[in-house]
Amino acid sequence: MTNQTSAPAGFSGRTLLLLLVPIVLLAAVIVLFVSGTANSGLQSAAPIESLTVERYVLMPGAIELHVRNSGPQPIRIAQVIINDAVMPFEVEPRAELNRLERGTVHITYPWAVGEAYAVRVFSGNAIPFDVLIPVAFQSVQPNGRTFLAFTMIGVYVGVIPVFLGILWFPALRK
Amino acid sequence: DFLKLGGVGLLGAGAASAVAATGPSSRAETLPSRAHAHGGKHDTDGPLPGTGEVDIARNGFDPAKVLYDFDYGTLSTLPDGRTLREYEITVINKNIEIVPGIDFAAWTYNGRIPGPTLRCTEGDLIRVTLVNGSNHPHSMHFHGFHPGTMDGVPGTGPGGSVAPGERFTYEFEAGPFGLHLYHCHVFPLARHIAKGLYGAFIVDPPGGRPPVDQEMVMVMSGFDVDFDDVNDFYAVNGIPFYYQNHPIAIRTHERVRIYLVNILEFDLLNSFHLHASFFHYYPTGTSLTPSEFTDTIIQGQAQRGILEFSYPYPGMYMFHAHVTEFAELGWNGMFEVTA
Image 1 (tube, rainbow over the protein chains, first blue to last red):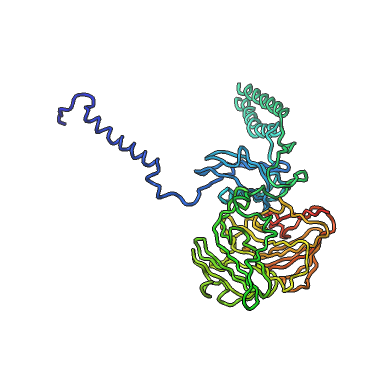
Image 2 (image 1 turned 45 degrees about the horizontal axis):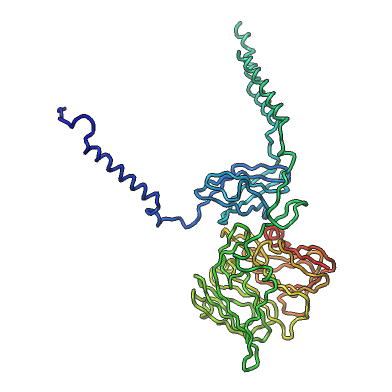
């Protein structure tokens, strides 16, 4: 390896300039891209909408859908149809959900235990989003009884077997 | 150590559940009462299918007026003594809000669904000028007597398909007397009809029918908003649930005549059921003698008939398709009968 005589330690002005030019050009390209002039010819003709029903809750006389706008543009919840009946509904916080925003659709509906319900949510662009409730039953409530039930499960499955195992310890020691 | 930890954990869980049990658990017990913004119904008897109001002003037509709107055309007398009636109909593409929040990209005759109710007398000479103000070819196919070149079917002449920007005048002698209809007959036929190109065509018998107190037009149809060839909403006179939100006013013992046309696409049958009263039914209106005295009839697509009835008692009475699915998806209305 030959010992090349190099420029003084640190960057020379010329190297610095050569380093910066691609960065500046990159910034310019990004600005062009983001400003939309580059892909204005590729605008999507159809609206891209996606509504995800994350979960549904059944309470006496009502069905609640917890939804999220999983598409790239705002979506408006226009109509709700349950088993081929157009039902009045309310949306919290409002009918138009922004990108990735969550909403709760509350529908007063006299559902019956054990029956199936097909819920269709129509967006403002007439795109249907379906959720099937295969067997209707009242959703589990987050109250003390449920808490106790899950605690007992935890005790049976976790705590008691471990304790039984530890009780062998004296016998094994002998 | 481990045992102590486990014991403390159990105690903690027990305390937490005790606290949670005393906390508010409102969801299971009470149904929150909210103000219902949709529908005109009192919800004290439970929720009813329905919607709120659509923007009638933006739609450009009002089903409350369509109900009583008969277009008799421009009248004149021909040298041979016959009556000449001239009508002009323009095809207009229009986005119509059929239910709150959903616009239906409709093809309309004169900007309304259904198209104008054309009315004349048997023996009149009819001239209907179709102006195509849209971007697809359209036509007008009449149910009734007319020559083949006036049939409005592609391949039968210039009236079979009127290109965008063009116009054609359909001319024929009106007959037979009865209730008929017209619609576009350009391929793909199901879509051209389903998107709104239809209307009623009434040919009165010479001398007219026996007088009644109220005459109404009802054109039954549906809307497929997501193009899966299945109707999503159903309606009479264009807007689902309209007469449920705006009951039709009639008086007790008033003789009411309804010109009822079915132009529902994608479903085999439609029906009409009247609550608490029976009607005389004149199928296609081609006879002055009724064929039935009943409260429910079915009509296949393009079948039509005249109903005559009156209400003996005041009250709110539903009228709807007795295909219940159609009723809950928009084909439902009310008569408000007052003394």
